[in-house]
Image (tube, rainbow, N blue to C red):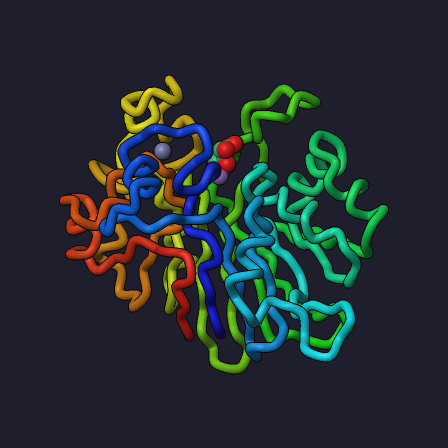
Length: 308
Ligand code: MLT
Ligand code: MN
Ligand code: ZN
């Protein structure tokens, strides 16, 4: 399986349009220790020809432009190698790219029923895009495995199994009151049926749950939520009074953070994605970046490419 990190930042990207945090300022000033980053999305392929997007970020147009394999095939008036899009949640940063991809070419969208419902009613991407392009929507439920079909119906040789990683409801959802919902946020275990390589992609992790630990069991690559360094980062940065955990993101550092767990996992590729622009580990000259690297974990960057 080919894995390409299209965008490694959380919502807003790096730099974020209205942000004056030290990372955003450093990128604007051309710091050699900071890389600009687009919003959260990954592409995977079993044959290097047909690609599945894992989330469709608001920056998808730029991401396709910087990865030739996702561009239109030569000698075709209109075409794409995008064979489908699998969503991990219904957040704006992970879904609004579907609006950019409305110009024709049939491909399927895969999400839980919960996410599907929100994207039909509360942020009605599905009905809007359906007036422009064929986007058959397939509901995939946690803990069930699905062989991903190509748009033609032929097998892609990729098999996906979603598993629940959080129940955080998107802020725009006003139609329902519960502040938690089953199937709201999932990780994806994706297996290449030819090579046996397993990718675990989990950009929204609320807890080190049994499901996550089990999914990590036979993974060769783990792309995991690196939104915040510490629980108080949103408050300390001054953009929210909520903690990282309250926002649905287990922090990287500290007691019960993801880094301690990841550092002990016998997985060759352990990579943080969905990194918020305020996260100090984005400064490659800083102690946090060093701490992550010394734990055998990578701070993911746009354009990172892996094969498993
Ligand atoms: C998240 O990852 O928690 C959301 O994308 C936050 C947001 O709405 O930007
Ligand atoms: Mn997000
Ligand atoms: Zn910033």
